[in-house]
Length: 516
Ligand code: AMP
Image 1 (spheres, rainbow, N blue to C red):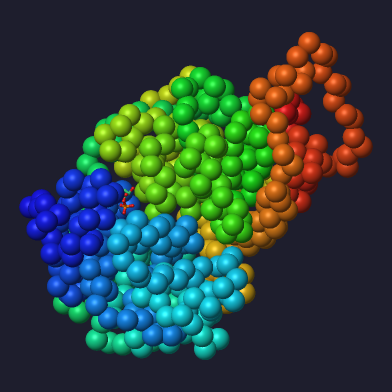
Image 2: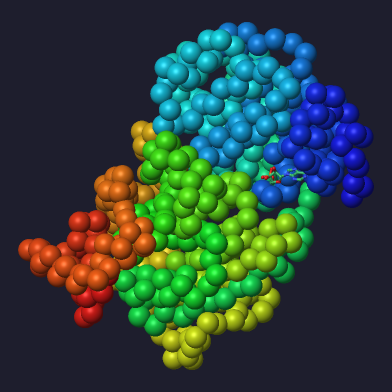
């Protein structure tokens, strides 16, 4: 691929000035290829992951093209569809950064923000409308928006849209747009459903494929830690040990389920860590606040579900921890790809329970080599046991593994943002009726777990830092733990008030009570 200079990309002088101000010296490969084509008004199919500079590859030519013309009330001139609120908000930030020398009107239509504020912006006329598909259709159906003035459409992270069940919405939206428009389409991978969208809605697109930042994987030291017990309290203990043994500047800790993100977050805070949580059930305001605090260094640790793995621009994370191994090996790559960026050293450590040894095999297959262990590796017997163990009603050894027969995508917690109402109408609810029993049970657990997670993510009381705790107990005997009457079922994990209902009924209770 021929790398050009920014001066060769046909961008307007005002956009060039913004690039200089951003301190960018050379265009990335996707920018080099896509920008001149997009500036010329042609359709682009960009196969590129986050971290390749793909956002600027559509934002810069869009600003150049939108310099001429004026927005009319409720008729946006351009539309960008993003799968998550965070990604949409990040794209908006890019417009602010690269559009400093322009007076473009921007509106962000995402869940968790009031319709009234968004309507006021639309009424004023917007040059750039950035939206998640569900919220955009909500506005359209309320008659607050006309899409016939859209000259440029961007679909960002189309494969993630597919993961989240947004393809029917995208099709609906594309049919509401004028057929004579420019479409810039981005996806990290090209599954058949995404290819079908491209064939249906793009006109003679220029296909540009870039490989992910080439050396990312080589700069990441990947380690695995076998957790014999598999119980959550034991995993949390091991995680704390790992964090303590590493020189962690900042880290993302991934869990497979939202409910576990909430529980782990509480646990970390309780143990004096500066930690936040990020998952799809949190309201927009607290998600953005948490992300900002993490970016600025106010929070050292971020417990997250996979919604944070893709798309989010969190530069320069020193460590990734996988509290659960992801169900799909490509998610493993996305997760650890948050560290070791731009040639920097990165470190990832993944906890592995007996049940997860099967997923580990897939990861090893994908990496093309055996993984390296911290501490004792699993024995042959552990591998033999991996096939035998079954999911139990409680957490502990049975959790973190997709129920047998469930596809990973089905089993994966949905991080769809906005309204449950829309989510209820979608495919998954229909599919549920035909699921075999273990999967139905899993879904029921998940729903209960998610409701509990919402309760668990209520803003925590202000927590003391480690130093404050130390100061508070300095020279004093720590107060004896308050003994509280508990229901006989509620003590298993040590998180009496936050343990999801379904976890309070373990079939077998751990013999050891967490020392947390
Ligand atoms: P993206 O792939 O769009 O998420 O971009 C990843 C990161 O690269 C963002 O933090 C951008 O600010 C940064 N970036 C984009 N283009 C360039 C460039 N040409 N030179 C240096 N950094 C860039």
